[in-house]
Length: 546
Image 1 (cartoon, helix red, strand yellow):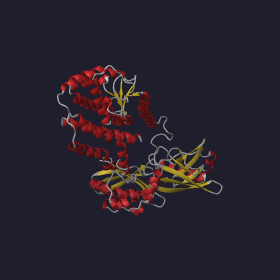
Image 2 (cartoon, rainbow, N blue to C red; image 1 turned 90 degrees about the vertical axis):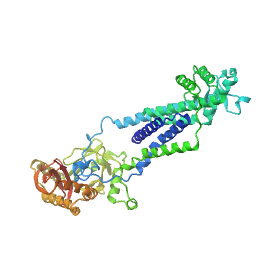
Image 3 (tube, one colour; image 1 turned 90 degrees about the horizontal axis):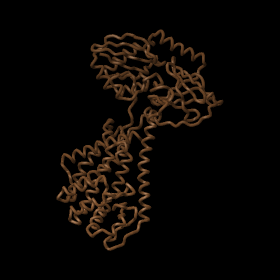
Image 4 (cartoon, rainbow, N blue to C red; image 1 turned 135 degrees about the vertical axis):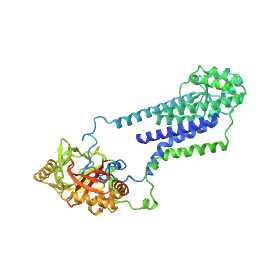
């Protein structure tokens, strides 16, 4: 939610700045035109989070994660997919950080926004009670309007469609009474209270954005300017109306939710404007409304819709095509998980060793009331239960889950790793077999020797990629899927480095991959390759040099 609000705030701010610059460039000073423009901007600002959310829903589903066949200069363009043999590296420590700054920021945002909304609602409640207790005025000059009098009112004000007057109104002359009623009735007729209510809501939603506060004040100022013009038109005397405003300048109101006729901090500016002008602002016609809408509505659509341009266009056939099973599994694996309580005694049935491939073994241990897992060559990570037999990881680059299959006695016989849209089975093995695999892995790192067939496989894949005929049948399914999606880019890069000249073994990486140096006519590449037990390539990474 916070990300969408921040995104909406930025886009609303850009829209406001563009409209402000356009109004300045066109030298628009008519308060009716300005009010219409800022009301449109207000409506766009309030709807921006919803528009951004809808635009994101319109994006195509996230693409395949990064296969390790991609060169590093392309790696930032897609999400990581095969960054590790089975589990991705953690972004930080295995335990959650001591301070969750995102959660703190979210709670701070909600607290401040909630406080602003609550304050406004409380002000409305108090003014509603005041209006209920105020005495209605039924005289000829009220002309059937909802006018009330209360001792707490010092300055004429409007709350909703109710005009509130002080007790001193009985001593006003006819001109002052006409001016006040014309001013306040203009607020009622134009629904300024409700427009300012929306501006207050916008200010609460985007309280961290100074432009939201500016927009609220600007709309309030224009509302007073237009009502001043209505009062001057009614009495026909600018100087007299300025005197009336100054006479109310010292009064105060009990609530900021009302439209007070004269606020101390703005009355001086308004008087200077009234005395400095000679003509009343012209009213808007349908042409002006149409011109404003033609300018602001497209800007709003552009501001809200730029997120859509971030995703590739899809044809109708792609949209209606059946969902790829691997992609569907990947999306299911990526959905948010909720931890549930599971009796820790059950965890003892899962403790043990599970072999993923010839060198990779899952070690499952119970530490207190939580399971932890370690894949050979990686650190221990905590597991969080979402059901008695299915667990998930937190704070890793690619979402992953582990589920256990059990015998009739409840003891686990195997586990399945759910990640990258794949389900990889690891069967339970004895401790001696697990230690043998772990020792073999450690020996491989200490005395590095290439996996059988890895150099020949690397040569074949480079040649096949240069010819545009990848050997998909020699790849694991995730690697093949990612290669198909990135083939054009890979070919363009290989075309720039020229023909392959030599390949030399450089060692074994910490994840167990064979590391080779490949020399081309116009550059070099560090290549990392990992073979599965069946001879297929599961990971292939190019890091390009000069």
